[in-house]
Image (cartoon, rainbow over all chains, first blue to last red; front, top):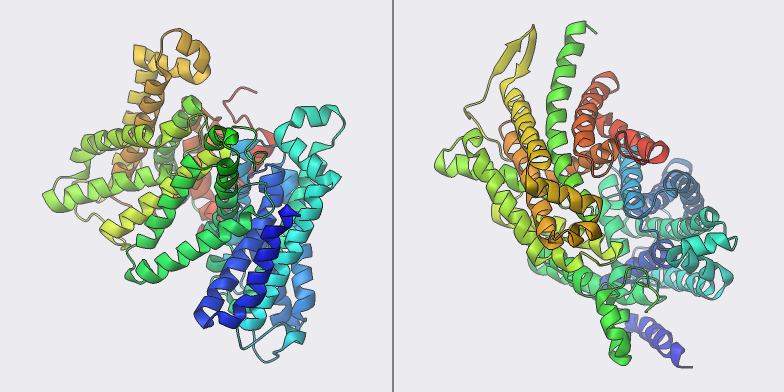
Length: 330
Length: 288
């Protein structure tokens, strides 16, 4: 029973929130939900399977571009576009995995940056895809049938629904044989290989699932913001944020990214509204200091820290963030 | 396309490649000794550029004259950064190492933007300007001076590593930390030294670039990607490899820009990077 307290409380708050929130708070809530969904998606490959990707913006951008291009150029309904975006991202993840998965650790992380950077260059130069100027989502067909709304509230429900679906898939993975395979790949790759786990295949499975849900988030972003360009949907900073949300909350934990997103997005938006307009980078400084602080002192994230408070024996291990068991503790 | 344009491009590729090599040598040294990829390396270069810029603007000191000062400042910065932050994550997980240096990258960019505004700045009328005519080639004098300067700094590091006791101790730590420790080498001192030299290399490159390259807070982002490519191509931890690979990447980048289009320069380099990672992950000079 106890493990249902947090999700039940979260869902209650999430369902009640639109009744109390004004427009700007609702917008913040949407940003929190969307960032959480991306973190949960990243966590599948980066947390559970332990393959640190710093190029997830490529999947996000492909999702956003696929649904938007289909809508703008061929009038395809975004409900199909969003799934098409997921499919395209899975296709890229196959190329991604094929080229990067034989690399370990730092090499993998650097290769993912390179792949994402290539995708960004491609979209910046591709005239049909709007090049550096970007694409606008037309507003002439609104309503649920076209996933396009004049008000923010429907996007809130969509973001919440997408997050719940992604969490449900994560929960299923965590409890199924797939989850055991992923953790085995992360913690004991040699042992896993010796008992016949096809490491390359399951890394790929993790990446493809992760890419699919990241792309769904990208399409939703495009529908909400009504405008995309390479700088907003393919930037390296976006890849970092997806990973960061998980790390802040707790890598390899189900609700870690959600906790991380609530904290990180709030701080980000707060510092941006406080200092962002000055153009002096104060918001970046606070954000960066936070990253360093977490990475140095709490590598197991807030969930790990919380558990270490309840089980003091874990505390020293949590602070050290032992090389292998980063996710195990939480 | 005439042969002279080709020769001209080749020359400028080699010259910029020497700078890439210098940046990459700093990166490869930190990685070789500590197994940490420094994502903030481009920001060390940025700090070197600003150091040259302010010394020039405020005190009218020429970037070439102040280069030793820039190098010293960045060395001190690298050591202090190690003592304050990096030493705490020496044995941490890869994830926390990656995000620590990523955070430092953002922090330095933010601080630069805070202190010096996001404007593009240039150094006008330094002692090196104009063009050099050599064997029928026309090359910018700042580029030539920067290339020569990069070679000199690289040579100094090579000499230090191969002909001094301290350099030998550093190399020993890089090849086997435990064994080096048992020989009485303090690995923390060596790590600090590696960060100092690593930052100094990037700072030197920044100081040399400052005479002909725009200076702005995010300038490091292009150089860090290029440095990754160079370091991988040369083999992680190999100084000689980074030197050769730096020149190679400079030439490939500039030639690719000439033959295919300047907007694809980076794409060509990145594809080369992925190709090397996939087919020869140990790099050209690295051991398998």
